[in-house]
Length: 528
Image 1 (cartoon, rainbow, N blue to C red):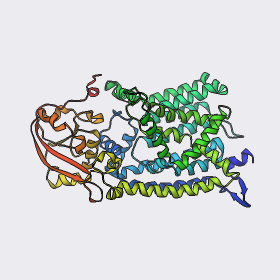
Image 2: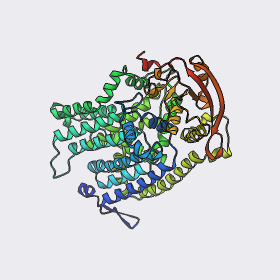
Image 3: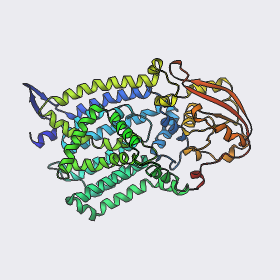
Image 4: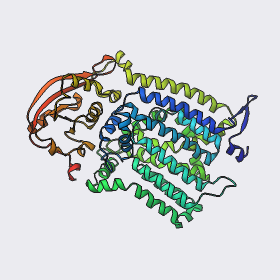
């Protein structure tokens, strides 16, 4: 089968006496898959409750800042722009759902550029059968803009590195200025962009035929463009004692025991679950083939260099870091889907296993989605098996705190002038802030993250406060706040949850007259 046949996406193959032929217009096939996925993610977006991270982001996004403490600003800017139109609820996911549809299309374009249209179709099919990208692809989080910008940057550069036959390569100036813009936007989304750039440099240095790039001014101008785009982050950090850079870099530093085998294995298992085993197994087979081939196949080497640094860095860091989350590796896995698409396309050309795999995977994904969303929304498993330790149920972070808003309104507390809210956790304060729709100032007593920068504590002196949060996160909070108020009165607590269960127990206290500003964490005071 010729490369040109693969390029136009019209290969045919025979298996067991049956002739199989890919759609004559792969673009239409991909558009259909994207449309189906778009509807599916849209339904999920409006069905699945907001996660704790989303609620936190929606809360802090009410303030438009150059940047923010624990995340780069682009996702918060997007939320801020759409809040007047979409409110503070699940509808804010819709821009991110649409954004991931564009990401999926660009993945097809990238894969088609590297390996042909047939591989592009398979890459999109595999992506649409993956757990994280299907379920979380439309969440209101920084990952969405990051993945779009990284794939766009990789596609822009691939068009210059691997031009189509009988077509002149695009202008290096246009290529690198546009790539610099996308890389800068990726940096405005998440600091992962630095690892993408590092991988790109590895690719160029390891490929002698690309060395001439280092002598051309265009890539360096593109680098200047990228730095100019991320300048809001640099300016914010310069104004806030480099707090965000210090916070993010500290996550990768040694923290206590080494090696943290349990955390490392948990991280690996999380990646396996996020990608889903039926997708990750062929992915690892495809990557294994590519790694064994080394740098000789330039196109697979390009994918490995842009994607693997993100995966490997955050996986290895789990051996010593204080915390590790498997979603940190997901943007790297995304950039490896072209390799998987090429592998599946070559397999499908000689045997029917990939088509059987796709059918079975679609059924398994549907079952997986029903089980996960059903449990998160109804807690049906807990109706059969109960546990006293609520911290063991991560689905509690997907319970929206809207019932608390209704409870406070029924008690007449939302109508009181001058009230502000204090909690002991940024996760809780984010959930409260999102539920109340930014109706009151919010403060965290302790590690406040972005809430340490939202309001000057001095302006709250003389005002009353509601002190509340999840009971398991309020240990010592009221005792610590006692010197700051004239008095603290305990009010009736409130509990709510799924399917009528009392899963989240919220003790509520009324703090009378704040006597002095609540303390800021060291990073908000410029103290190391």
